[in-house]
Image: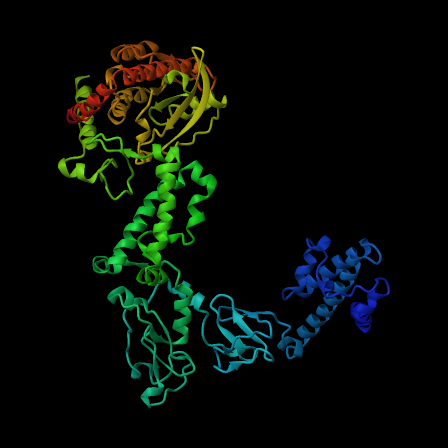
Length: 426
Length: 208
């Protein structure tokens, strides 16, 4: 093939010698950076991912054209020629690897991205300083010398050599398919129910009880390779007992709990409404979130607030005000620590300042109590306000308490009766 | 005196949904008309500088939602209004029938000091359309019953009579404001008395 022949010819000459004849000695370290004039070119992409033969061929043609267009001895041309060489090398690699699955390039760091059991594994840079353990074989990942991968969705880390044997599904996929938490506290059935096998890797568990480790979240037993004795806050214990003490869990559960920590999956009103009366901080958070939910109605229809992006500038977790009945596990942990109430108070201050002080439109959209006819502008989210369930009128709680019926409802009813009377007269 | 100060007139436009409240306001303020219908949410206002009787005044025109579903947002902006514009569609009889309830609602929520003398202006909009359902005579009769409310037949689409109508609105609003200002200045103590009376009188009208 002429393509290969050309390729090997270029390979024979090193990249620097290709261009050093033209350029003066500016072989600085930033030589390999893309010149800004070419930054927009897509050919750069072909190097950043696992490109197919077709993509590489296309990139090579494009690169060739660009070389011809560029000025002699320019920085662009130097970079383009280098790029062309790299592209051709990769094409060669790609072709060889396709013909022979056992090709060394196929096994080593040449593959930057793998998808296994739902994990999106990315090749990690060498020289990482932190000590990591392989989620598959539990051995240390010697990141200085061993190629290793990490899942960008769930954080699963493993050696390159372990990729093909991965057993655990990506926690992100599992959590998304399941859509909720196990809400029974440690649903244990016992070793006999799982035939004395590890619930994950199915390896036999020794009869010596201390070696079979129980996961407090799934209630199953695991071997030491699948249960490292890590601990996590278990949702079922929080929902039923307001028990936020971390419990020992297996690695699979740990990763699932981590992935879902910020997802609003718990409807406490349905799961355990009595919790609100027993836990003071929780009822405070509920009240604050309802207040924010009421304010959201004003801000989302206010042109001034929309111009300033007021709503989302201050709220990093949308569910806090969009669906006030749903809680994430992290919300509950933060409620317990007092962090969430503080945060909500800050947001409320900003919002209420806009609605009640700064914005004339929002102020105009407030209510006046019809019973006392006071000049004070009332808002449905105010603590002192009560909303008529029938006509949506907003009144002072204290005023409404003195009357038996909402005056607006009475008026609407009378008007209806009068209209009916008029019609029958006609 | 207050007359030297910059005068702000607050005008409220009320009426059933799709009678053309927003269109009238846009035609008057921006001289623009769009055939597309977009429901107003809650309420919003535009301002326009006008000269009335050689005085420069700023009109703050509050456009409101006619649709029931947007009325859970409050109407605190009724309070302190200087004039209320009632709008109906001359081709839709139901929009004329509900004028009474719009007027009543406004008086209750705004609770002006003298409800019977508060300036209203009635606009019969969409006169460019056929067939007409409410004759100009019938509308004028209604106006006479309500203490001679000024009546204009307008077309927001053609820009017909819009300028004249809003000029009348501005004049009425200014007259209303002047009368209040004079009262406040001459009898500051009496105002307090009427203010304390107001809730009672209002409570009566509620209970009726």
